[in-house]
Image (cartoon, rainbow, N blue to C red; front, side, top):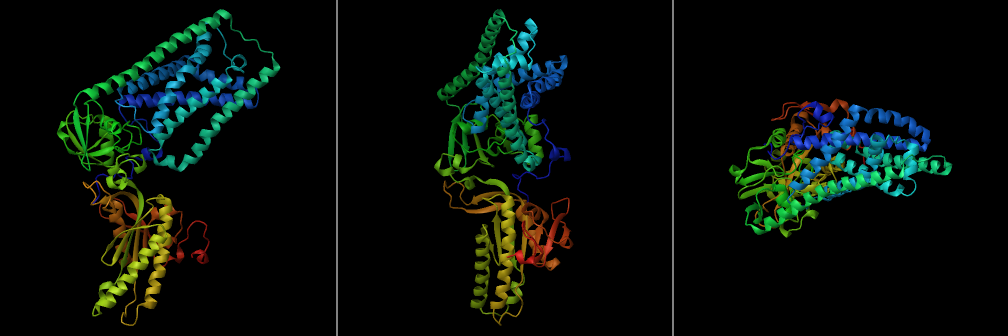
Length: 579
């Protein structure tokens, strides 16, 4: 049975898998994202223009013609100004709606950097746009580099880095929700580092050349400078007044919550906290150090903050459009909601489904993330002794138990030696998990290496089993990769971590189904193509089959191998390397 807490790995549409849409979240979040993307495109163009200073100042001037043609035309300028005002207004609105300043480090860094940007950016904007409109000043590179170099060069460089870092944090935590981003993340990281380096290099090189030439006269009078300083002070006062007002609202709400009784929120393990109506469940959890994950920062773009409402569901308002969209995509029951979107008005009892890492949790009874249940991609292995029943008929109990223990001990030793976790023994079968600590790609390679070791165990047992066991010992292995809930079953309510760690979800059922497929294929290993691809391994094309799995619309592609000799891992070239 498929666990309702596990989202489908198949996107809603092909477009969703190929390219991210800014259409997730409520209208304010979508508008903030779109305005941020417009500002990022402006910065990308502007910083690329700076980079031309590596060649010459004249190259900067020539490229700026294209830059200003786009952004200083009537349409471009209107779009840019609207995007800037919208982004700032929505950021202030979101800040004022916070009930706590407790947040992940990346969110805090983005917030602080965003609050710093106006301080340096306001005088720069007034110089380039205000003086141009008021006095006809032409802010070309010859003028601006001379104005900024050298006394304002450091502050301007810091501004460039702060703006770029703020943008990169936002882009990263938006794009990381989409599969394609994980395939290009290292290329994206290289570009994210190279772009500001090139821009600063061009800025410094161009300004240095002009300073050495000393043939540029700044066309700004003393009266115009006085006007610029006055406008800078006025606009800074307005912007930072609004910022302080937003922060003041948070402080007022905090002290108000300390005075009144409020409502109670109950978590697993007997943990109950008090809170004020109005805050989101995510904010309430953060205020009290309760582990609830939130990959997108509470913007309803992911489903990682989802919780199961055990009591009090009827007191919650209906999901808003943003929450409804996410919940429909992952196909969960009505009692699963997003912690970032629900604002409890009455007592509530919930179960977080995807918690944060254990090292971010402070309470003693939630130090172990598996106590709560962790969702991640893993490789699940099932091993079965194929003809055990027929082999053991009319055999002495001692011989049967000895053979079974030899098989289970050796197989489990191989699994552990390759980095796997032995989940459980099921009669004459073994269930194991790979990739819990190392990630799915490494886990896939570990699992395939373990299959080689298990094949050697099978060969050794056939040599050592003795004449009383006439039939050949045959093992069957099934491997599949997918999302699973990893949890300590039996630990709930105890406040301890004594329950056994196990995996739950569709990936477990599919791996078990693949193991049974060995009977009809007369094979040793049936492994899904997902595992082979993750491990970057190769298997003979003639061993590729389509298998129908109950509950899945499309057949699953698998490789059915009679021997492990035909499978090659990265860096291997032939049979001799398979040791």
